[in-house]
Length: 354
Ligand code: KG4
Ligand code: ZN
Image (cartoon, rainbow, N blue to C red; front, side):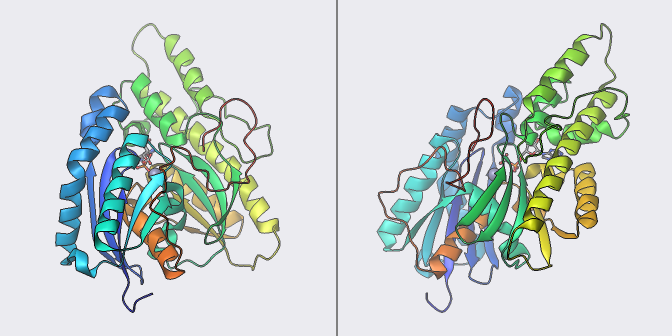
């Protein structure tokens, strides 16, 4: 490791083209995000082919902008990191090839980063957090509970059998005619609604494990909506949907906290990190915080700009591997699926989301 190491990171696994530059102290020297949200909004979700084309045109300007923001040139960069999966393959390919080309041309080490590891280690640069800690990752693509033990050692307690929590918000919002992305729209609409008025089943409550399932909520919501012939009480539906998703996150997190606390080699400082776009939801945050307090966990919420997809988290994981001299070979092939915990057994039932 050189005295002052600086890593440039690229993220392009979904609908944001991002580039960030970070140093080994975790200082963000640049953080650029080009969002495609408005392009995908009319379709009510991300269209992979459209996303890939947008990444292609945004990649170069985003990198140029990041270098400009940092006041650095490529000569000052010590390594290039890029999301190598999991994610939409078109975007991951574009980010990977760009990173390899930059690294090869400048004779720099290249780091292929697992996108989930980016989310998992964000609190290491935002809060200088030590290992181990418990992580709830709740986004539009993932809903997972993981024990983050040390660099590269992650134990997956649970994942979703079908949809992610953010997807449940997005699909629910579409059904209620509230637009995309659904999470913020549902949260806003839920403010004037009664969460008790419409009964939606909390999924998998009877199972004492940490796996999630959200597709049934969408079906239950659709069934309830179809019973109305006139206008529907949208705020009540939004409030019920939010409360049901929240209660699922709470009861799975509670089981995970008990499991984390009972593992050997824990000191009494237990930390619960919540990351991903859904963590922006105030009601969910409030409920998770009181759960954490009741279980003697200190809850850490990285700032929202680093909770949602960004390249700073990718650059940081690159930095962690750079500091231990573990680079990636140039023949790395992007991985649409890339579980953080290779030994995790698949969740029961149909479908596995990694
Ligand atoms: O982490 P993220 O920005 O992107 C990935 O999916 O990787 O998460 C986006 C998801 C979307 O599904 C969006 O509806 C949800 O996070 N979300 C929210 C809120 N803000 C964003 N869900 C509930 N409440 C919110 N306030
Ligand atoms: Zn993500």
